[in-house]
Image 1 (cartoon, one colour):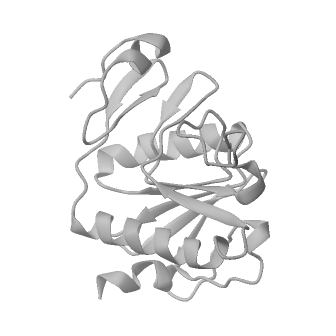
Image 2 (image 1 turned 135 degrees about the horizontal axis):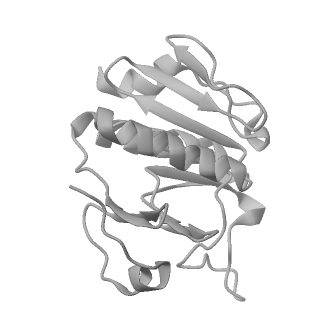
Length: 182
């Protein structure tokens, strides 16, 4: 389906949809409906990251969180924020809307057509302050990692994956990402 053309302001006034729509490159894109592999990886990664990051108030992973910044409104499969960067209300409660760039963006490939858009979104985030991006491909069980000022790297099996600096003592491999599928 070809993308709709709206302004960001018009897009933000439109009702939310499932699956989510995103505003990127001055167009509206509907995310594909997730299949079981996608959902399992998303749930497990969120749990794994939060088991390490939340108890020590280092980082917090969110699934399908709308992030609006630099004229775009994206809904990555997972976003991770360093704890001290999470927007909060005066009483300390997490804000309901995030208008900042995530520290780590994870996209899970749903279709070949969508992987190109996912890569462009990850690169956009990196160019605006994101520290780390992963593109997870359940088909060939690879993770392409994106970091500022580095070439993307494809990781398989026991290849270690980069994580946020605040999670330095956490070791995670490409095999760990896909373990929930077995």
